[in-house]
Image 1 (cartoon, rainbow, N blue to C red):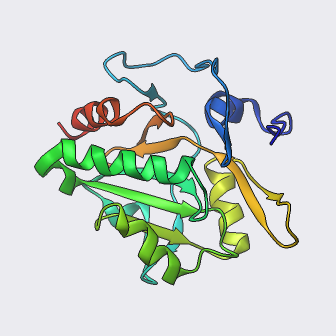
Image 2: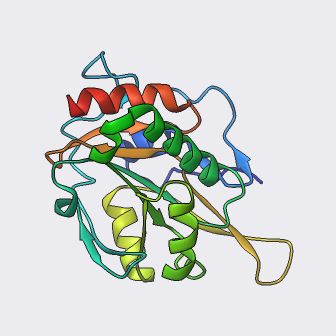
Length: 210
């Protein structure tokens, strides 16, 4: 599957969201370069402190409860955009975050992982309630209607697009594969690249929680 052009996105979107774009049946090749220079060199992921977007959200979780960033005050919040029928990037990321929680030990209770679906057409709350907590019972799936999904993706400058499959009515979703991390005060702090393993993420979360 060819990768989709990002020329229509804003320059800052290219700096962050295109660090790792995934067509879920094909990952971007080697050589994706970090555009943003880390503000804090002690972080292993990209420091985006002070970023002027990804300021919050208001969307229901898979239990039907309205969630905002303020719902998780006092916790580090990891926000990932994906969909349940993604064959590789999404389950890999969620498994990676489950491993992060294990590495954090007792600190894991101060971390909230959120899986925002970019495929509300198929990802019902019921499906998300089975898929997301299967990786860790503390993880939450977030789902809105088409307009709400487009809004939160725009607010986070996250790219997603439906890609028709070979069979009639089938499709996959191309989408940004990285995650955003907020500190316990609700401030955007990190952009986490896909596929680096649990240790760098656990390292950075420990710093944010210290």
